[in-house]
Length: 130
Image (cartoon, rainbow, N blue to C red):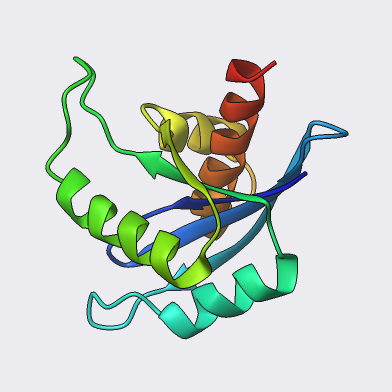
């Protein structure tokens, strides 16, 4: 099964792809927002190109498990993504994914951090669904 994940941010959204048969994932790209507006044309283009069976979206939680301040914006993104794609969507706890991505990419181009964080979302989903 083909999986795509989105690590939502108001300025940029990290995107990664994964495959359940091989349990592999890769950072794909960054989608840049303009004036705090999601570039839905680019998001739709990615979904149409990759034709995923499942879309994962990072759920921004505080360390105590409560919703972060960003959750309201992510929920709007999630609901619109689910509506326009007509593909099942799931949240994945994204606590520490950006931190882990920064650690992994310390010597690699910083622009890839958000896409790598999206990759980590897929890896976490694989681990939780074995």
